[in-house]
Image (cartoon, rainbow, N blue to C red; front, side):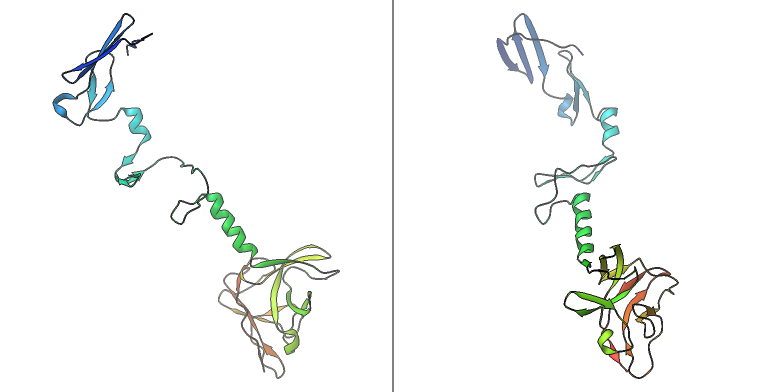
Length: 231
């Protein structure tokens, strides 16, 4: 391609769909209209005879796979199919804006955190998998379905940071502290062991039928925590 350099432009004139630029000893005439007014693309303008084409150059086609329907500033142009990664400018701030991955991940983390709570309780003695009830203000103990007072379970221990700190989860998917479950079983609060679960409903007088979770795999269950019923 020939490049014409002007140190100063002294004149621009137009005639017959052309524009002529002159200045500082140089001159350039550019054709402005494609042949027969067709929907052609100006590929290059190296001389007074331009190069027109009805298709995009190969390098451009390689970057755009399909351009069928795109909306730009409320103008519908078709559907856009891309090969590559689209990076958004920022997290959405309005209802119909596109969401970034980091925005969605943040929401998931926030929802997850609302189903668990970290507790500081001196020498709590709990391990992951223990089912707890509120023994008093801010004090937890292992729940057991042998009496109404100890059967009102509030959650299950899902992490133990140290002897004084633990995390209990009170909703959603439980993926820690469970083993040897049968998918489809209803898991009840144990009547014989404090903090434990069993896969059969209590049946003796004075015991409490307290469904806690529904097993969905050998190590995973959904916490549902139904109302306990004393026998």
